[in-house]
Length: 347
Image (cartoon, rainbow, N blue to C red; front, side, top):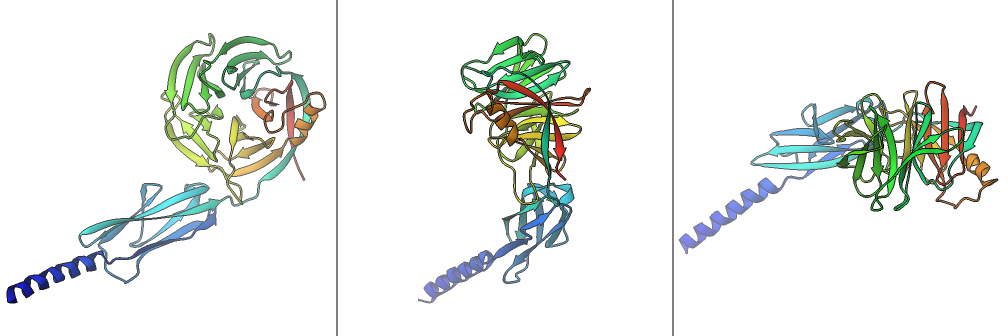
């Protein structure tokens, strides 16, 4: 009995030690919502004040500086959107990861714009417009739907298609952009894009998407391809490899802007169609803040005076910018007109 008691006592003691080591209860407290340019603070707590060896904090998977069990983040450096904060905790003989999140809203409301029609031009009403870009006096356009997707070079004044190739019926064509004499063209749900020679329209290569959900809109700045995927994210791609490098999230001072579609860089700002809402949002490309919203509902109504449009389908889509002459062109899916417009800020 004495030996049995000793073994039982030992087992109970070991179990008690293990239980004590496991009996840590951590909480990662963080400010849940704030606005851009304010700081986010947080602290890791062990509810029973048990000792820990150390803690490392990670913001969206990247290590950040901290002061012991506390941290502070300047939101100006990370932009708007939802962000994940993690604590990697080291305590006697063990490690644990504790997660939380917070949301950063824009610190100002967007400006509201209306528009003025400067000119209108013919546009192929059979073109289900997905991408639109001005380049050296011509419009380049991509159209969508399986079996109808094409890449086109178009005369502005006449709407005449002077060069065209069709996409394989397997794919649903989406947005495009021209960079370094190459045409980059997205597909919708196939997670694949194509690169064509600008002059000949010959296919040069294919590329796969990485983390982005789908292919919607495409434009570029001096260093990156810039892609939308139907969410509130805007992705930056390496033009040489087409690999996704990073993204920004697009937010107003109240909420995220989803369904970002066709894109265009205009005077350093990102202009994006918001799918099915006949609106253009103007975005700070560095932070994701929505600087302005242009309501173009009346432009669709103008189209409907001469053409019956299918609701929620044949909507505004397509933005092109002639930088040299400061002209903005817009059209829609299966619209019979292309419009040159001027955006007018509401007072």
